[in-house]
Structures are given as C-alpha cells and as structure tokens.
Image (cartoon, rainbow, N blue to C red; front, top):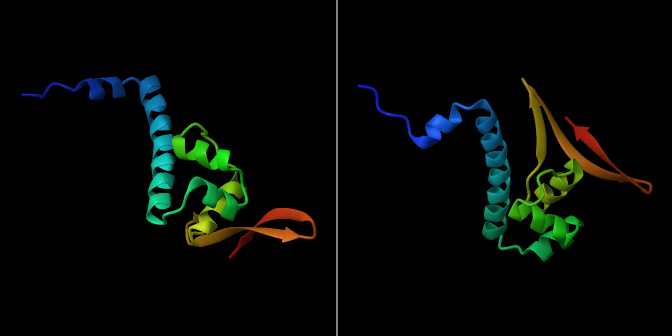
Length: 112
C-alpha cells in the first residue's frame, strides 16, 4: 500500500509553489547562517558593520531576511571579518575573491 502524501509533499508537486518555496528557503538559510556565525563569534550588528565598513542597517536586514540580495563586495567584507574567504570553483580551478583599494578606487580581484 502506498502511504498518502503529506500536505507539504502534495504542495511540492506544484512547480510554482516549489520554486517559491526553494527561493524562500535559500534566503532563510543565509539569514540563519549569519545569525549563527555572529553568535559563535560573539559580535553585534554594530560591531560587524564597523569592522566590515558597511551600514548596520544592511547587516540587520541581511540577518533578518528583509534584504534578499547582497552585493558581492559586502559579502567579501563580511566574510573577511569572520576569517572566511569567498572562493569561486569550477572543476579544479579555484579563484579567491578579494576587495582591493588601488589609488582612490575599490575593486574586486580574483587571486589564484
């Protein structure tokens, strides 16, 4: 005998619902990850913002899930505060992304 599907399983068969659910889940994961790392490192929103050189409201909005998109430069800054690097991988190739300041301009560079 087949076990009847749960409400969630039935809903996930709808492609529109499934896509919306997966998008929301990804946003929640990033928010939860930020909260967890901030708690583990015992750092406040204000202190993280100060160390990363970005607005406290951006940090709070990312933490709460109100802001869904993050600029790559902000992601790199936040990652560096916690001792992480942002790395792009394709096959065996790895590029570490860093923000550098040359003259008066900031730019992203990839280091092998």
